[in-house]
Image (cartoon, rainbow, N blue to C red; front, top):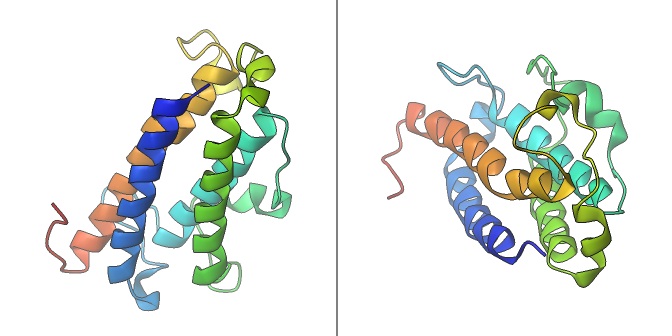
Length: 162
């Protein structure tokens, strides 16, 4: 079970809510300097990754139609017509990771954790099984994209949160 990783992710969800409270809708499609991802893309990507993590633990992907727009290897370009609403994205991220935390801390996840993750970008890496990949999704990956959102927020003129 991934109790520490889930606790870390719960903490990070609080930071996400703080960051997004300052970003108005007019900034959601603006790519961040340096990383080039807009807050809309980051939120959509995080929501989809939470669902992919659930799938690794026996669940399903609820928004498969988002895969071309927000999935691994997507361009990061999102037009206003393509963008899901802020409310749908935030709900999808918060509910998606809350569900992933629940699944990752349940005894029901144990049979899945040692399976091969099948994710080609991590082939022949220290991320060797489902447990490693879900732990990464809950911690490093989420934190990496929080840093991108933080940079978007700072570019909008807000001071550091901490």
